[in-house]
Image (cartoon, rainbow, N blue to C red; front, top):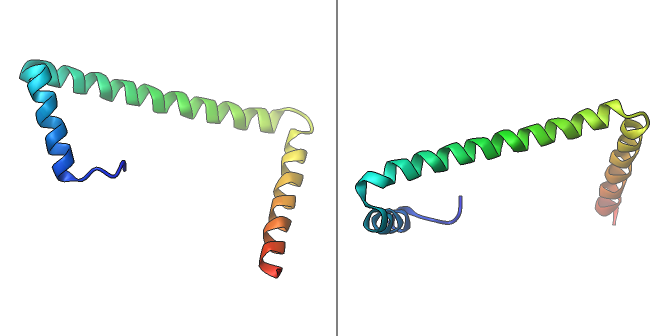
Length: 81
């Protein structure tokens, strides 16, 4: 994911254990998990809103379709050269 292997993760966890102690580590992990879940949920909502805008505003879907066709044509010309 971030280029971290097992040895690096062990070192990071050992340092975190030394800094925060055994009692705080589960609380921190739980907080990070909740924050990541909330972030992913927010990203999903933003993507859904973008799709709704694309489908509900007149003309946006047609423009998006034309853009997709132009992009495909550009890709085809790259293979022809």
